[in-house]
Image (cartoon, rainbow, N blue to C red; front, top):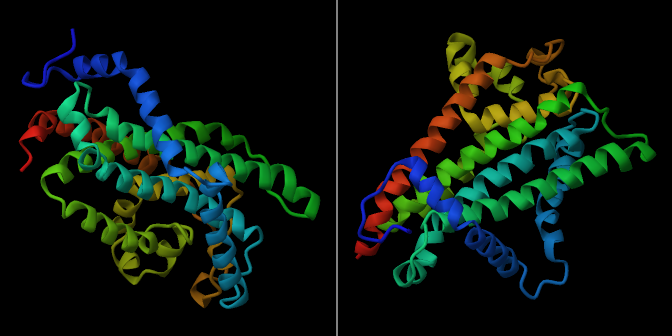
Length: 301
């Protein structure tokens, strides 16, 4: 029997079992999210691809023609950072508002309330996968006909694992901020500010090698770079690039004298493993916090 709204939270296994019973509801919510997003749109799902492609075109033009970045296939490196970042930032921001937007629904009918932010995460995950599909088609199938493209590397087998880990990270963060935003609507403003700043701090537009070789603070205290790479989203963007693309020295992105001749950093499996562990803890903590607070949603002033 489903739990009633006045019952206390059960174990996480019980919560997951209850959520699984409502999987058809989750599918319906995901479908609704996708339909609402592209309602009255002629291009439909194409709009999930256009923004990151336009960003890549603009940044590629500026960095190549204004700053003189010489990297071959620079657009492939840039897009491999923008696609995972867009899923991370958009998925969390959309989910942060989901409970407040659907507040009337949760007051009127019984449902596992985590289904609402999860639907936002899944709908953004669909765009995430579509973005990678376009990426692989463009650089594996189309670009080689124009003397471009990228080779298929054996490390590509790790790609699905990184996708799963990032999805867990987004889910954990989304559940946490969705519950928190019910009681403190400043959360949405904080998230907007943080993501706008983090876009330039995380290795989205440049490889993590740039920070390692150019930051005076990192040269004095190498452990800071280790902490930086333990940040899951920084680690996952770095992993996508290493597993999909051949390594390129940092001087290919920046002609600073201090970078000339510097080798690309090898992939650090230790920090990647640490980032994965942190992700599991974030997913567990986010779901735990949501389950603890969801029984208090109806008491929202």
